[in-house]
Image (cartoon, rainbow over all chains, first blue to last red; front, side, top):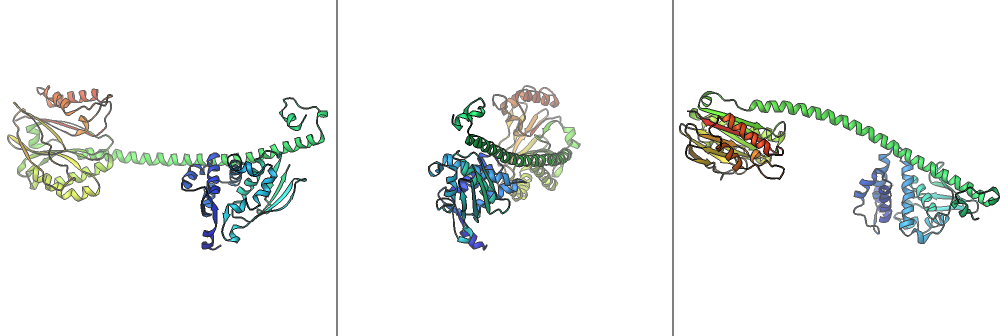
Length: 179
Length: 307
């Protein structure tokens, strides 16, 4: 990816803020450093994606095994979005989140820039009766965090008894089971 | 009973109370809890591992700090001995003419209070008392620098004004660059008088029929590259001269009251009949009973003209 094109990739301020706030809520090491990194972030502003990457790197560099931490951050972002943000007005059931996040109001509303860098977050298939779904993601977010976003977003309404998200075979494909 | 009611109840349901759907949901609920537990376990394992590494790093830093502190402490002990070694001892004409008692204590191992005995041109002897700004190592190093400056010029000049001006002029740029200055009390003794320069220092002369306090109109060494003023006072047999820095008089008690010049002055005046060693002891006892703790370097020099 050319450096110039990378600079054109922008992320919504609320997303950066959400990540930092999740770090603070979870008392993970990046928390105190995270507040200083986002002191100038306007939630309605657009920022170079590198700002979010910097926060991710802080977490990754602080933990030998950062995957569960990033997953938890993703979950915390969505729980906060649901309980303290617009989430409750947008989704009523856990499965609604899959439709929302893969639609124009979801992922596409928080990242913009060159198409090949923005990527996509697509609901490839879903069977609500069987409780299975498949998402294909080529977006620039951390896949561990994204796994947490899916878990958190689906569990927030509280109607689902069981949610499992796996992407260990191919990190860009999230196999979801829910009930 | 609905599935939600079953979950809210405190007693397990009977088999007949459960539908197939209830059983399926209970099963999935249980699986969901296990899955949550699995995610929690991974999270806490990662956090605990991180904590373990953090503690290990902390232990390592602790050991490094202890080692560094030990080296610093050893260096400071040696520096303290060196600085004490640079202080003068009484000898020659000065020893015959004067009884001198000195109390000199740095706040830390090394510091910026300094006193010295000199021999000027024409074999006059002199005493200098200085208080270098700041504390610790930097002040101690400036002390060594100033001592060298004084030693350079001492046997070429006699007037305290010329001596102090020479040192001030040659040291000015250096002291400015290290952001340091020094108060100065410099006294040259003649047959029946003394001549002095006082820039920020403190001096008290108790004569037969008069008590004089040193004029304090001058600036400090290293603060301005300007002339100093020289003053003269009669100095006869049995007269007592007290030279000191501000460490003692500005020390405070529990009620935040200063010890003060007046109190020190009165202590000396009340005990002029005693040997200077005893006057010094009494002043120190009074000071130590007064102050809650030392907060600065202290120098107190009391001398009596014997001849």
